[in-house]
Amino acid sequence: MNVISGKSGVGKSVLLREYLPLAFERYEYISQKALVGKKNSSVATVLDIFDHIINGYAKISGKPKRFFSKLPGCEGACPYCSGIGYVDVGSEYRLQAQIECRECAGTGFNKMLRKFTVFNMSIVDIWLMTVDEAKAFYDGGDKKISKVLSDASEIMLGYLKIGQPTSTLSGGENIRVKLLKAAFSTASVFGIDEPFKGLGQTEIFNVIQFLNKFLKRNKTIIVAEHEEKSFRYFAKHVRLADEGGKLVSEAQNS
Image 1 (cartoon, rainbow, N blue to C red):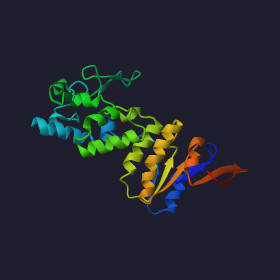
Image 2 (image 1 turned 60 degrees about the vertical axis):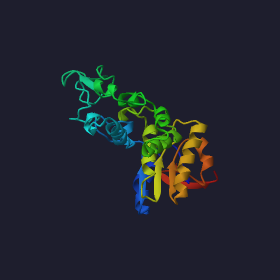
Image 3 (image 1 turned 135 degrees about the vertical axis):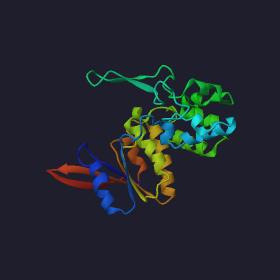
Image 4 (image 1 turned 180 degrees about the vertical axis):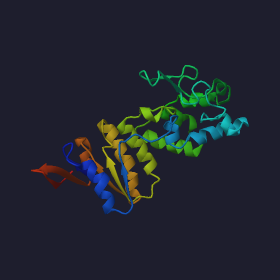
């Protein structure tokens, strides 16, 4: 693992985003930009476990999948917010705002779904769980869901709610979700922009442990980072500096 440090604006992100892709054939850049998704995109959808959750309830109840889905046009969607979980107020002539749908408490599901439970838990109850709570619920059950939630907890995302909208995730949370998805990538080199932003020492260590799994699969990690507490975990540390308008680098021992 390699870390690149330097003052803000020196060009660390530009290096990862624009120059390293030219140097490596199988390269993936992981930024803090918000995850792109639809209006009803959530932690469950970006972690690719939404369908698995629905499938479980459909199989046990004998109902079709669309009965439990809150996607547009499906029977499980709240009729008041169309499954989004919030409603827009105002108009193009006035300040618009989004408020939580009172009918579904922001879940996007219709009330009828509370009647269908597995071990006394409805799909709405699952939606309101944190990742850690859902991990305990699915332990020993659906292997796909259990594995994804376990990895999310390991990378310090256990406090997020299963149904939390992706639009509410911070830059650091976005990048850690992307790391979870990158675990299945065929890239051989990863450029990661500030994955430790806002994390404490214990949290940094846990994220490093997750990144070590990439190394075991012969992947190369290049991180741009300000957080000095993380530098000691990297085999090579390169400091970038702007000296008189000229970009220079200096290798340092971590």
